[in-house]
Image 1: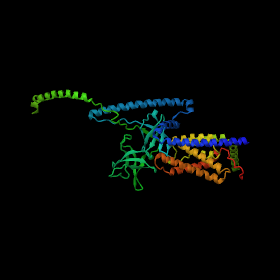
Image 2 (image 1 turned 90 degrees about the horizontal axis):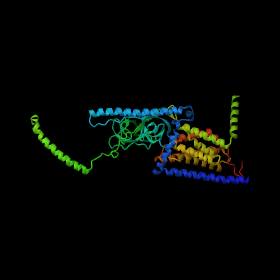
Image 3 (image 1 turned 90 degrees about the vertical axis):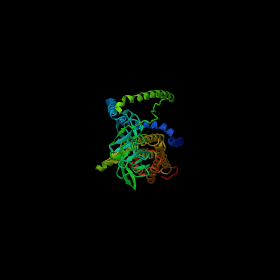
Image 4 (image 1 turned 60 degrees about the vertical axis):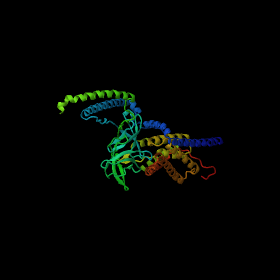
Length: 310
Length: 186
């Protein structure tokens, strides 16, 4: 009996120490994530975990036994093939249209073909942490980094993490989201972010003018993530201030469409091939002599064409 | 007659539960938390009203804590915490820390004040523990988001979690009692 009691007394401090050590370790992990470099290591692990969590896109045991998994896999392959071919088709159509446009108007670029993936919302985070949703489409379904999500009500958010079968979308209603917007009627520009009361707050407003009450708020296209003209919400008045009621809340059908971002390449990514200065001088010299010859020829021309000109 | 039959059935279930060992109770509790958590991952809207989902692992932490410290509950609570972190987009370790802190505090209260399972302490202690846990959630969320997050959603979750606690507290009782102090009146 005494031995048993002694054993218990020994065991309890071990558990207590284990609890304290676990608490300290977890708190250290929490603190470590305040460092951006360490967070960059942890984020991929989190993405893999979220991918596993969105298991609705993964086949279950019964699906494997019944052969449904193989059929689904084949369907997915065919869908991917169709998607790829559709992309080529739209590219071909776009190229044809662009060629036509080139023939009609000089140096006017056509719009890139619009394509996207519709995904089901598998998990919603509406707790105290970031307002985000997890959707069951990832790189395998053709979601690209920097994609944005919209539903029938308007802009939903942008993709902040991509896994193979899932993506996490940071909602525009989140405090950390920043969307460059403009008023549809007033044309005023501002930056929109989510606030604590499910309404958007407009910041970085111009000194003169203001948004019109009741007008629609659209993306302005600045920043290179959201294309211009997507509906974000409507201007409402709350507590004497102009706020934005998000349009996405009107269309919560459980699905979102993930669209690729504008992806306009920066000039630094594709620098223009300028000629070497030395060779340019040489070319200038040659061009100068050619120009001289041309000038001589053009000088001679008026004589030839003089009767027509006069 | 029907009422009597019903009470007999209930007493039979409670009899079976009384005979169930700590391991089985722990496994059943784990399964319940996992089920509630998995259902909570899906979009939860009823007639265009968003449902508030409880933190089942917190109920388990406080329930299991009353039966004293143990390695298995600690490991399971950390695992549940990591799953919560991933699903709630919280910093990793945040919910694990809160779950373990609640577990440890519950155990401490049970050892220090609730050896006799006083009804007053049994009622008040979980409320205090939930309140402290949700304050921790609020603090971590505010630090993580660099702004003070709204309190009202947390209050809603607090209420729903406490309702879940009232309904399922016996399931998270592992059946091990922290014995009365030597020489105390019982």
